[in-house]
Image 1 (cartoon, rainbow, N blue to C red):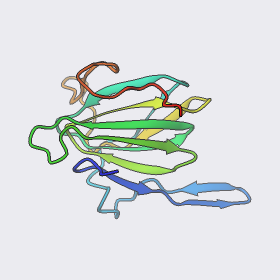
Image 2 (tube, one colour; image 1 turned 90 degrees about the horizontal axis):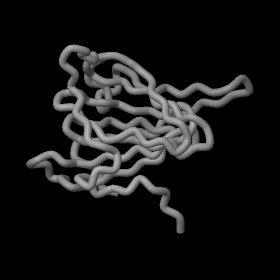
Image 3 (cartoon, one colour; image 1 turned 45 degrees about the vertical axis):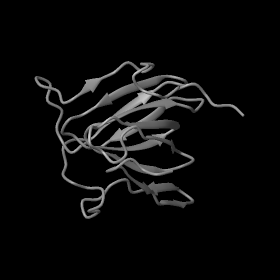
Image 4 (cartoon, rainbow, N blue to C red; image 1 turned 90 degrees about the vertical axis):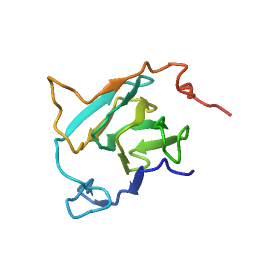
Length: 154
């Protein structure tokens, strides 16, 4: 899959031992992923739930699914982008620990594809501004975006 311009993906290293496991998500010396610190928050989705679509004009999001499995989908609707119209689909979580950096202007959303609630940690580079949020939404099943959230059997 060709990544949308500005999107980066990193496979996270899981270090297991007899007590459990450790996974580093983001370090401030990882210059390919870390730009600056805004805040850290978690969001969840229940099995089958879709949370989409939204984008930011200035904020870069950095997602890691830390529990369950999420189908994270990106759509490039940016004018002038070399990948305008491209869709990236990632299955992230316990079976595929990855970090996804989503640049400003790229629409994104996710669907819980596990049998239990899935948890995503986001490390955006901006603090959420409650008075003037940098968040713009389009309905999850909007015909403006050429993506079907239904499960693809085959």
